Amino acid sequence: MRFNLIDRIVTVEASKSLTAWKNLTLGEEYLGDHFPGFPVMPGVLMLHTLVEAGAWLLRLSSNYSHSVVVLREAKNIKYGTFMEPGRRMTVQVELVENQNGRATFKGKGETSTGGTTVSGRFTLFQYNLADKTKGLEAVDARIIADLKQQELLLRMN
Image 1 (cartoon, one colour):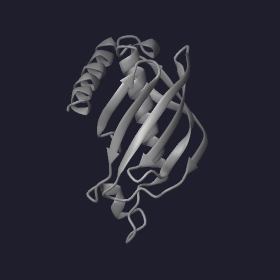
Image 2: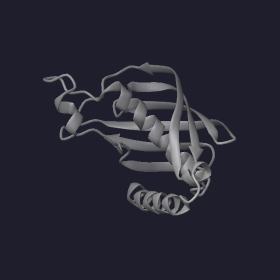
Image 3: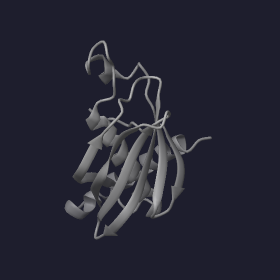
Image 4: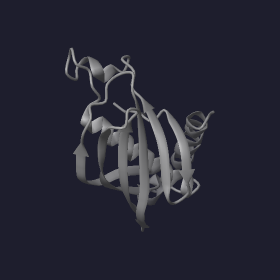
């Protein structure tokens, strides 16, 4: 199962930071199983929102030079306030280092009431499929085209 959790990219400062929103609704499929009777966003999905935001910052800063961005490492992840349906999480990521396809970030998610939901450091790795398997250039191009279409939706005002 693949999750696209970021609902809106609010601000981008290329190669520096990105701010995005995640609006949690009761209609999200995973809430039915996560603490029945007390639906809250699972911690791993809160972390996933940070990872998504970091991946968007890399894509937008490098003009989509890589088709694939994956989580390499997560450190010092801390969870705080529960994220309940009806709330918005503001996600902020800051690029700390970017070398040889590895990018390290500091990130934080906060509820609309100001409570921190998740924070920590994480490292993403970016590459193209064709770098690993010859003949996949067309697949890379298709992935990048799809991501550019998704960006249009995420940045609509």
